[in-house]
Image 1: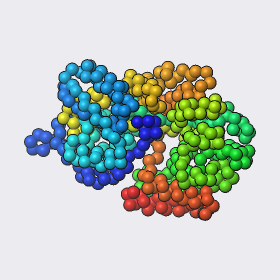
Image 2: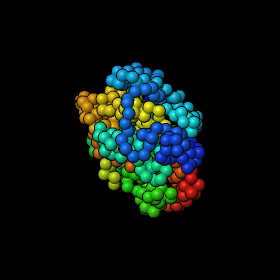
Image 3: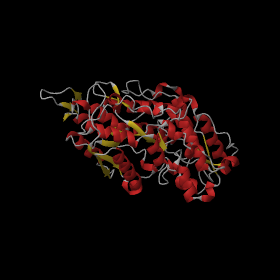
Image 4: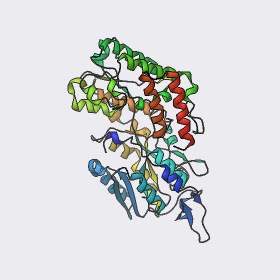
Length: 457
């Protein structure tokens, strides 16, 4: 699994939520069994009280498409765990991660055969928690939070069937956000590469300078707004959804219309390739050819440029993505490790999940040359691997910049379903094409988003 897979969002979660409606955690039946998501489980897996029991037995551990690139690493982690806990065995299942992943996970959960330890993202964790299939780690081990950066531990909270927030996941790894840019192109346009803008609109103003200086020879950025919505809004402090998440409210903030007006202006003035409005938002090729001034905000992009375009890499620098009204960097939701409440050997599963996500193992995996990810434990982020910068090497600087950000980064990003996000993006694209005003586009976007939210889309 390469870096582009690390933030991949799984779809079709609604199937699980609907199929498991009415399920959850409960006390036992008359025969002394308890239930989790409709499956009979040991009483110790549910309810209040710390999880107890011998760390002995066989469990399954499920990842997504990791064996090819990281087989040696994870086999080593498993071997170390089994050595530290005689009498345990971990069977590693590596799911291919194809488009039937969610439906297969739903079937496994409903059949009470879901893996004991499983890698999930936020949407999957939300659905599994609501349906009662995941162990309440915060209750079963009150000390589980200690290794993690507080903001990342906070993201590990999801609502159960009663609406109560519980910790059903352990933060595992995350990405980061930064500015990647071609110093020569910025200087040519009169933009100081040593002074990155502090606001989104300040960044847009720099885009405009580049458009005027380039006169079509190169561009500032890509046009497709899909990667900016709702990321830019979150960074600007624009409230996207109501507190209960049931309605869109972004049109109530005048800055949203200003943002769309800026996007339309920049597109018209040539800051973005015309053919990138509804196609690719990936600047990899054009940036590597020296035709786009700003590259991807993903730190792994810096390594891509280093490997594929040494001449452009020599002109590349990294800087802080604008903090804007948020005041800190936005880290987004990490990937998580969960323990099935249906596990027949929950003490083993919980022990392995905590072992896998501890500082030592997180740091070791983040050092793997095949991946560009960042840890969620405080100790890992202080490791020399992230803190030692080699001269002016952009990749080393990117690692340190993001690692420092993550210590205080906000993880409260707005989660929009693909349908709602696409509806908003489509209206912004119409405004950028000059087919409607920015104000009308924002108004229509909110109306369409609300229609979808009412439908549960």
